[in-house]
Image 1 (cartoon, rainbow, N blue to C red):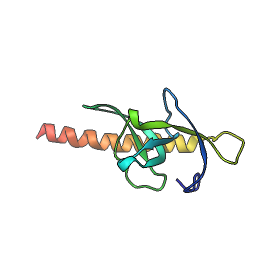
Image 2 (cartoon, helix red, strand yellow; image 1 turned 90 degrees about the vertical axis):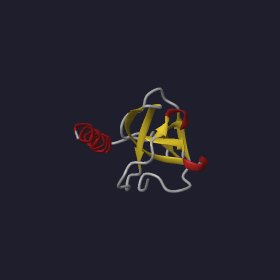
Image 3 (cartoon, rainbow, N blue to C red; image 1 turned 60 degrees about the vertical axis):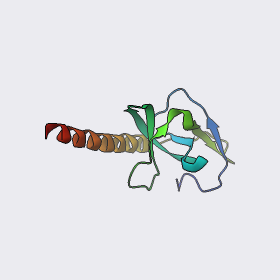
Image 4 (cartoon, helix red, strand yellow; image 1 turned 120 degrees about the vertical axis):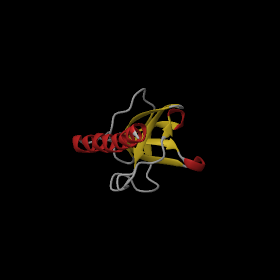
Length: 115
């Protein structure tokens, strides 16, 4: 998540009811690692509601994360006293990434149905 976060940074995390695209979420990842990546949006699957995340410099989104695995969103990075602000550009980019990936999946499924 550089340049926003470096490995080992201390952060303040708050559990929220809803998250907005662009928020940086902290969650239990694969093999019980704790991961922080940018939230792109929600995805409904046959197994329930999941969240889509992606590293800032990643090409593809991460494996979908179950809501139960979300610890919260980063609200502050130590030692800075001010709250973490997410720019409008980062939020817009997150929505665009979510649309790109979800529309691609939808188009592939539609093409399989029409065959």
